[in-house]
Image (cartoon, rainbow, N blue to C red; front, side, top):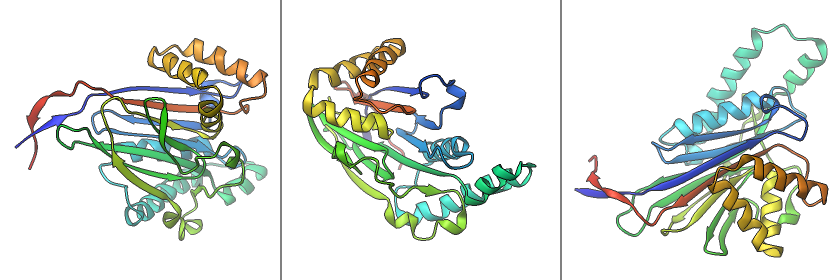
Length: 262
């Protein structure tokens, strides 16, 4: 049989906190265009080695072909957590780092996977835990935002993914798991917490500014985005934090039909 391969236009961005290097950024991005899987993670600043934990989560989730149900997520988290534990065990840490390492690392994660669905557009599935968000936009309207849709709801100590396997019991059941159908022209944004709160509020109060951010993303204008967000921080509208963004546009021009695997 034949199927339509949907043409996804993808841009992604990683910006550290003001004054820090990109190597110090505790957010992470996972992009696998070949698998139509995308994610961002936000490592908790107060936890030990959270940057590495966020990178492990994004790299392995984006590279998978599954991890879209709580049954799949639970053993996956245990495996990755045990892997990080083994890495820590090889290190000699100062006493203050040992204390933090005993508590483990924590991170928020949101990911979306697309699959073909004929001529009408792709279907999508998403998983999310914590305060990193997926925003599905159609035209000027937000169709859905999850797991948080209210910009005032950020900052209330959400449940995060712990690296310690013994802390992971029951965590998989807390994931928000959703899905739906996309139309040509739809945009999906994966955003870590600070930029998610800003984007949702800006869409409601100053839509032209939200559109300008997307224009800069589409143009891959990192310098322009940096200037814009610095100005928003100076006005007190954007919290000073690391930022990770993935933007996916469902293009109206699908690639030619191809033979599907049975």
